[in-house]
Image (cartoon, rainbow, N blue to C red; front, side, top):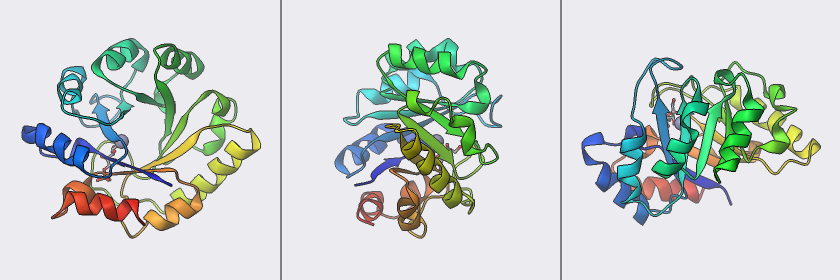
Length: 215
Ligand code: DX5
Ligand code: ZN
């Protein structure tokens, strides 16, 4: 069964507690939390204090997606703030293997994210060391962008690599996910779907999450 990870990036930041309570009640599996630094991506969101504050109101795993340069500097801080899964960008890590080891040493699951232009095969020598591959299906930085169609091919190729290497990594898709592409994403090999605007922009987010879950 696939997992749903609503992205709080599209929630009302003045009412984060109610967003958390809604997600607790819903059939969402994880909270997807987008951290942006204004350097790796052209936008700034929030950091550790906000994550720590919402942790108190949340009952589900925190899937933290770091869109920042030099993530190594903050791995322990994100653990202390409440991250369960910590995903870094391939493009932001010169010593990716070391970064992954540090995340795991802190007791978190380790993920690697690929920008739309980054080919799947760069993961060949790291795929057995990671728990999750986050395939960006938009250019990172903003919610509400449109889905990039090449993602389906990329999922299939990543899945084939995972099988070939006997890796336990799961595949998460992030950007432009709706009920129109969810089925095809799962059929292509996706295990986790992130959805921001589609959930928080809807009339009834709980029903929207249910719809994505039962697709
Ligand atoms: C984009 C973020 C996404 C974003 C997805 O850089 O990584 O998690 O919140 O939002 P939607 O689902 O609106 O494309
Ligand atoms: Zn994200």
